[in-house]
Figure 1 (tube, each protein chain N blue to C red):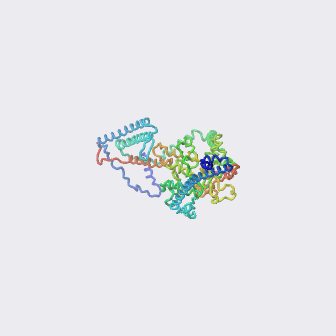
Figure 2: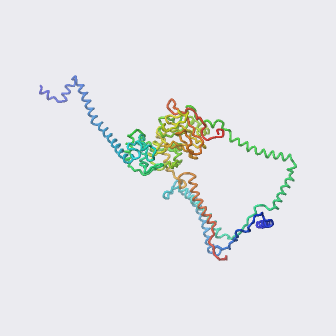
Figure 3: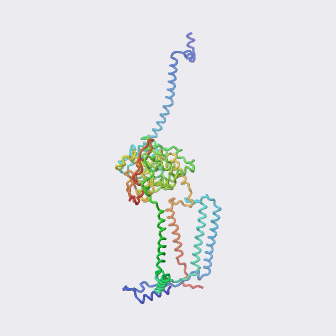
Length: 288
Length: 352
């Protein structure tokens, strides 16, 4: 009998004892163990992978920051100097990833030299490096994130949206950037840059973060769709043809008048000189 | 005319003017240089050549005028011409170039014609004496006096008075019509549509604003919430109201603000609201630099420091931008504590 009992298959063994008093407890223990092992097998691994990728990016950003940015902005982005010296960059704690993506993505940072205003130039970093820098600065304190692509996607903009963008642009932006988005002068050598041929993402980030002397237009007040409509309007301005042939900076009567004066008056002066000039004379000759 | 001239010099010789010694002719009159003939005057072939040139220019002008008509119909309206970096509407450009060149050629042909072929004679034309001769003056005076006597203007007093009254009163309508410049503005220059509890909303989108929506460095071009409904009811009044009530809301680090005495509770955590209308001649201003807190008026460069009671730091404006006292309503939105405490916009006569 004992032989027989020993030869019972495990399934039978379990089946025979399924009504045992502690069977429920054993099943529960098995269940917990299975779930626990499964969790241990998958979840912590993923989290660890994510964390390590992110922290690796932040670490990489920190290294780039130490080399390229820390001389002005401080080793820990706390800002350089006492804020009075022109060399000192501002604190970057809390400026968010959007500010870094704008400043480095448009080539304004790293700045070549201190001055009234840091100009736009060819970016010095690759997109991956910019993302690493942004991740590092964003890790210091919460700030505006880089906007999602659909928030500045203007490919489906309707005429109504462009018109609305124009109203918003004329109310909020033209004071500095000119009614045609061509930029304009500000006091003490500063200027509002032209908005032509600027990446829609960078226009969005500029409104979101307020770079240099530009004020901030936060997403709560100037909502995402408002910003998108403004960008769509700027795009419409940029793609408009100039019916006369020359845009002349679209600065209106000033530039047109200047060209009229230089070209038109110049031509009239030439003609007046021609009218007044004496023609070639036949010296000493007499009419037939 | 040379006749008059001779008379005048004759009179001067009779009565030499004043004690000043007149030097008869300080610069020798060089006279007219001897006439020289043009090549076209002596060479018929050259003259014929110029004739052909002029005729060709006129004909070409006509062809270009026709060309502009052809271009009007033949070139599609939306086609674009490109020359390297320049581009323009092809239809527009070709019509303009044809017409411009045609007009220029007509002018050039006329000049060439006049210079080369028309008669080439040099004449001296003397100036008139500036005054009339004494005889003419006497004649005119006599005629005038005779007219006065014959009309009886000085004798018939009744007619004279009637005429003067009639003509004098004719000037009155011109003065009375000036009344249409009015009516006088009364108290309307002192008030805007801001009042206690009116919400501050975004211009264009009309969305109300919560203090937490604004971050340091923020600029909002804003308007009173009671403005938008006026747009359909009374468009003219809407424009007037908007021109006076437009405001800018900014958020500045509280540590950078110098609060004016009596305005301690006019802002909320560094959120300040000022009139958008320049106090110089009333341009709307929103050229705001968040780094300096300066607002600059594009018209005449008046600059206001919003962190220091919007005091004038540069330019011709005479007084700071009026500040709107802010509060928060029960739903957490920004509202006005009251209307503006002083008139917005430029100075005016009654205000001084």
